[in-house]
Image 1 (spheres, rainbow, N blue to C red):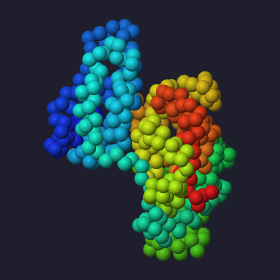
Image 2 (image 1 turned 180 degrees about the vertical axis):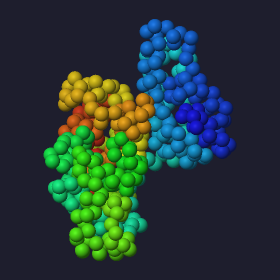
Image 3 (image 1 turned 30 degrees about the horizontal axis):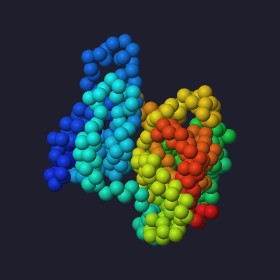
Image 4 (image 1 turned 135 degrees about the vertical axis):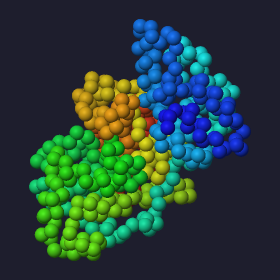
Length: 433
């Protein structure tokens, strides 16, 4: 399937004859105005081979592709209402705010500017989709989980025998009393080894599109295999772990009760831990109460912060019940985060580049996905400091400033920043305070 905005839209409205905007009109607009920088089907102008000009055009296209490329799985959607809402929201934002193409690009490409009439047609087309991007977390009693597995998984999650020297458990890096993290820049593994990346929360992790910052695990179950067998983390292997667990007759009986056998396997351990982690949703925040209809659950300032959060298009990445975890995005879309961090500019902690900074690229080896990371979950965000994949941001205030500047290219004022921070603190589950 072709990863292009054009192809995406062609499939979507092939079954949407009721739309006021005709297929051929949208087809022509996106083909003429968007494909060159947001697809793999760039048609280079004759002057693209000229010295200097070639480099400038190449940089424009690389930036455009890194900013907005639709994954191939989006092309399977056959009707308008099935379009992922965050994709529609992002397209609407760019079109309605006239952010594309960038100002400098327009000087040499007047033919790429989307006209007022074209904007109207595109927004009319996209406007047929329900835009409710944020929703409350489900109540725990609605979860359909195997409670025996949850109980066993809870025990194993906190069991230090899963590490090579019996010093670490899953909870060592994902402490449920610390928002499902360790509140450290990066986690400490077996024998005091310092890891390369910040520990993400296990709360609400069931809503992650994939696991780990770089998405290398498809599910919670496959993720559970990783740390145990990583020599820099828990430093064990399943054979050694199982040999220790088999010496515990009480635990063996629990495995027999859940799985019908005392022949413990690594898959069983990972499966039960994953079932426990699926239970770690936190639906008791004031924001959940607000979404469920209690309009007094948050203050006027917090509501104003939520409105700013939406207005600034934060929900194009932080959407869904967990307000995050559903998509990958490049860190440093509008400004170069890593260049500034290496130099210690703009208030960033000076730090050299590492393999962990490549993000999704480490897994896919796709150059367009360098510095792409799974968007973090914002639930309980005030507890999961420090922030970003590198743990370099100590406070929510600084995190909002960093995201505003490096993702959207704007320097947010203190008043708006503080309102957004007030909103973010409404996302903390009251049971965790």
